[in-house]
Length: 533
Image 1 (cartoon, helix red, strand yellow):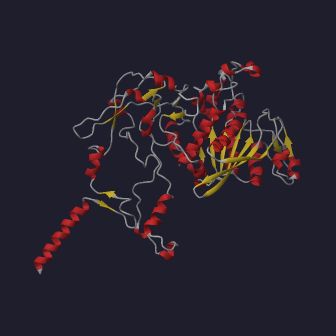
Image 2 (cartoon, rainbow, N blue to C red):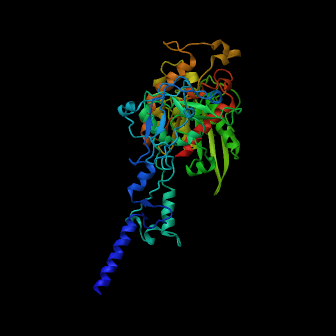
Image 3 (cartoon, one colour):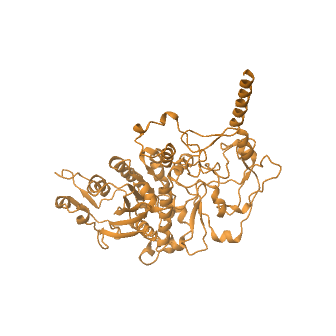
């Protein structure tokens, strides 16, 4: 009997050793779905002897790129804080060396490859952050290790579990609604590096552009993203796309995204370029197979705001409104309702535009001392402390910088701070707010009545329009930065559109406004970021 016991114990020990060399499944989760590797050596064999895929930054001098790539993509100018690095993955531990990437996969703003020596990398602060192929977790997918603590597995009567639903189904539902782990910036993103953009198939190595990733970018670089280029430029314009150096804008499903994000009402503010951006949003929604119809509009071309539109049928409010000229004839309010078909049925999103040609727009106000309605010194104050309280608070607000009008304003920063204060006071933090910089102006495209503004300069530095707009975009970022870095404010930035538009002079119509293709791409970038998180 004692001999049988010893044999049994030996078998148990052997089974335990084999078990520890395999994988462990968490309770309540199907082992085919989530496993945790125990042996670190298995990771070393895949990732290298140090447990990582290291990337060596090496000196290789200047390179060239093909004429096809040169013609199909132009790097943007006015780059203040770009980035560059030539990547070479460290050879794996096996004897067969891994092929080096072709130099043509990287383009710089000057058309040259840029390299840094291994010694320079040792002296930098990015040592070891060099994963060439981001994992699904970094790309925004769900985490692989869905750890489920045993104390979270409550009895059926406590969890409210529907009859017939298993532990695995409950856990998978919980995982499906987890916020994806935020991807990390590539290791080459740092201040002072030159602008270099991955092209074509190599962009799959980049993480997905998202508001979370942009927040991390702001914390490191301290500006709106500027290093980018236009890709796939051989087509007329629809197939083109804008690519940044540190992330890639992915495709999105607007109906499912708006349903998942609980977006029922989107409000956009801006001047005439903001109006065109808004129409880009409406048209993009329609081109996606959805149906939009006009609910109400402020009226035809006019410099005067409509008190009838903004009073919402309340006579006392209409009589309380003070009116001034907007100095923007195409700044007209409108509301569209868009019906979208999702996997679970129809979903309606209201798209609304509110004209604001300045950060402190004086066109519609309410005087102090009004017995019924709150006083408002600017249109924006009236919009957020009165109008949206009657019409309904939007789920998302997009503010298009009106710098085509504000570039002459010496108090533009102070006026912008006043607008931010109004929104912080009146807009709940459940509403996401997106700030969109202004694009370039082109002197060569001014004609007709606008020809008299050719080569007009601004400020003490005598800057041309695009240079002045770039300067103000940068100044306004500094004011926004504390709100962009603090996720509790639910405020988000965007690409610096001066850089993004600098290669699209042919899309500009009159020096200020662009054709519909430009606004289509701006909306594509915006919705891609919104839907990525």
